[in-house]
Length: 431
Length: 196
Figure 1: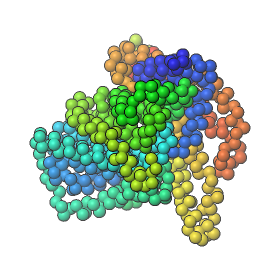
Figure 2: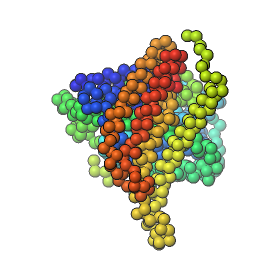
Figure 3: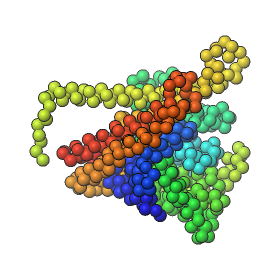
């Protein structure tokens, strides 16, 4: 390791530990590298601007953020909820199931776990705790756990970021996430049913089946969105980035024209909020671009690959190792940083070991999403805490069974690449 | 520390507050407009591509001729870059950033203040010091034309004009952190971070 790189790491970790925004810690850390290395700190800006100006695929990020914000502000979320309550609310642990099914459907429309938790998740937690059938910690925990499905089922912002750093097809990545996402939903529902029986959560009064058609009609235009997006991307109508714009446009049309639930003032507010979060994410992406330049000039990924070849590990052992590392990192770092900064280090090793990069991408994204709910540093826990005021300690006490079952599902996906790659292959993926 | 009386008369203080709120509103308006423009450009791009397939439409609606819309892609990239750096310069608040604040929140308020001062100083000095070298690196770009934007924005536009927003960002954020350090030094910090 060169002196310059050491300086970079020291500054980066020191600033992060002091509580500076990660994006600025990365930026100043790379300045330190460039200064010590004698390259001149002006290069950072050039590398960042060139990288951002060349990455068309990144445009999906702000557009998916707008789409999710519009869906949350209009009544799209509420209508979906009404539909799900009628569908699965009658079983024991019903609202828990509603929560998971809602997340599954919503994840087919939005690409962000935080948007899932803050939007539809907040409404559902309100329903679950209002009647007192569920402890509020349980309601928050199951919401956080099911929100992790959001970016696994397409569309997905983390997968867009992974596609950027790995040069894999975003279309195949999206397809690869569908089966794993459904599997995650299934295991969460099993866990919820089991806990509801054991702890004897009271039954809700079921919505009569005769109401189901009416509620389906009310929610139908919203239910159509995942299908529209998938058709757009795989029917060759739009690029995945354009699909993000179509999602936002469709959500806007629904909210304004069909559901009439959005005023002009609210729309402006949505645009400001979306601009704000897109800019904050964008700066982390920019920082990661410079950091990747630093890491590449130090030849770190090749060194990682070399040392692994020396260790003579098998592909599965390597994946399990990476999984443990990512889960541990997920306790202290956020998903965007992990995907943009840490994952690139492993990619050359993956190629050497013959690991399929779409498979790797999907499990890495799931891994990072599980990291969003691992205490102590879980963004989803923080977001739910911020929007519902449910104490973190109560949430953390209830999150463990869901965490365990999600990790188990991840393990299964790691050792069975065929499950992940089945759908992409069906659509012509050669890997 | 004893509270000092402000050296500005009260009305000047009000004028300052009015000015900062108005400016911040305006900055938000710009960010919202950039966002909306990006969104609409995408919709336009898709519309144009599909309307071109409809027979006879090109003759009746020459405004939808696809050859007129070669700029949409690069224009979106321009808007994105401006959105990110304009946004971080003037619209993003300290609490909007991803931060690793476990340590920051765990230490005593006295120490927290020094955390904020140290981090703020490093960021302010780093960003402000890089303005000169960055502008030098961008110097050559004053000659480089954009690939497709001339028909939309005019022939004058060069890559440096687009990249200039990064320098604005360096200056604005550098100054804001410097101001935050000064405030932390004088008055202490809130638990939302130095410039909150």
